[in-house]
Image 1: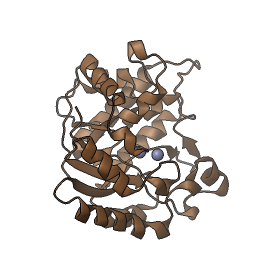
Image 2: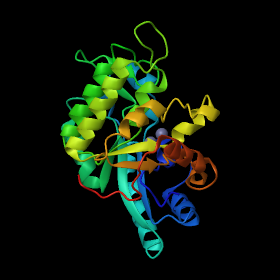
Image 3: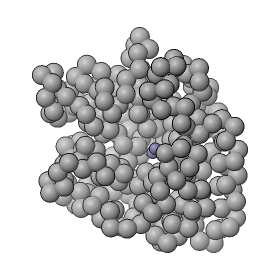
Length: 275
Ligand SMILES: [Zn+2]
Ligand SMILES: [Zn+2]
């Protein structure tokens, strides 16, 4: 079962509940040894046009002015729980082109960064939503964004790498893990191996299940992980992606370990910071 969790949100992103301390108490209750706080990083207003900013819910993210209080909460909890829990500071960030200085600034403030691609740009700067706008054509840009982001050396873990399958449709408009999806999966895995990046199997995704009996979730997407299992060098960790302290313990986590067993994936308990 879960020993450590490196993917944890809190109320500053406005779609999670609880303060850092609440997650620490829950982690201790769950007998975790290490907890990484990784709330969604602020996205400056000038990173996209107003319409895209609104439809990606970016205005809900933590504000730049809240970074200090977020880090202060983490420091307070480190003192309070110093004999019980190792606490890391982090952010989950997107990767938008042309803003490497900003991501470097974020990286310097915390112990590590998780890369989570909820939206991405094509070559013309058009923005796509990973939940609803990945198709046979735009998939290339999702993969390219991950490749370019991971080559910067800024990120330690790629979270929910298989999120592109959330609403993916093939060129006939059918829901299918087609050749393009297989190729995308391999490219994502290979860039992680090349750059020594962890990939995360995301336990939050199982709330979106559509066929529990066959382990068919929108994500974690089982066929993605069937391919991943054939890469013994790939470093896979489980991430709770907690948006409520209660998500750190309880029976819902069993389901992710069932999936891991069914596919035969080897997961690492502990994440080491390489980047
Ligand atoms: Zn979130
Ligand atoms: Zn997350």
